Image 1: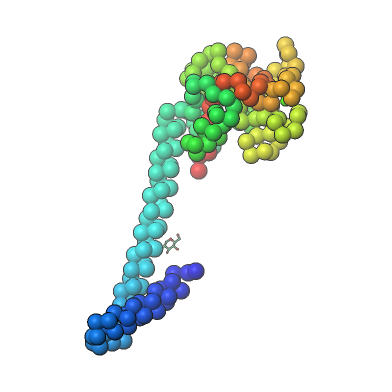
Image 2 (image 1 turned 90 degrees about the horizontal axis):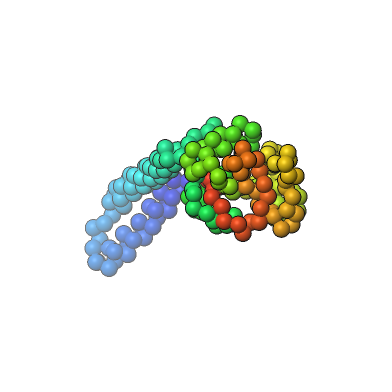
Length: 203
Ligand SMILES: *[C@@H]1O[C@H](CO)[C@@H](O)[C@H](O)[C@H]1NC(C)=O
Ligand SMILES: [Ca+2]
């Protein structure tokens, strides 16, 4: 419903209210002239309401941007995204929920560059011996590795020089990035408790 319709409805409602109150108070002085004035007032009110709505929306957007700015300052910025590492060890699901609760998702590198930036960031922020969860799993279909939105991953960085990752079959359905292995990926049991990095899209 657009603002004009709302306004007309509001006026009709107002006329009803006016009639009722004048009946109740037995006052016959409220005439249509007053009602028209009331309608003009109500139109002004509607405009004010719309302005308040607009300002509220803008304020919320600013708050979001501010929060994102804080995340970027505490973490690091890569093209299009801010990353925030958390050394607390959690299962894959708990880590994923933890990111979602902050408006982000588990980090999912989409290129060798991103993977390298993530590796550097984790190394200098939470340490050189860390395994961190990636937003990558093959829980639904064994061997089909998907990102947090369920789409197939286009970039992967499995360790294949020493071992042949992913090698855990149906017992290991979640992916980690191993800092000690220079950012190579390994599959692990999703119940393992690992550090994590959340990513936040920069709007
Ligand atoms: C509120 O925002 C909408 C969409 O941006 C705009 O068309 C409208 O004119 C704004 N209203 C007021 C009262 O500022
Ligand atoms: Ca698997």
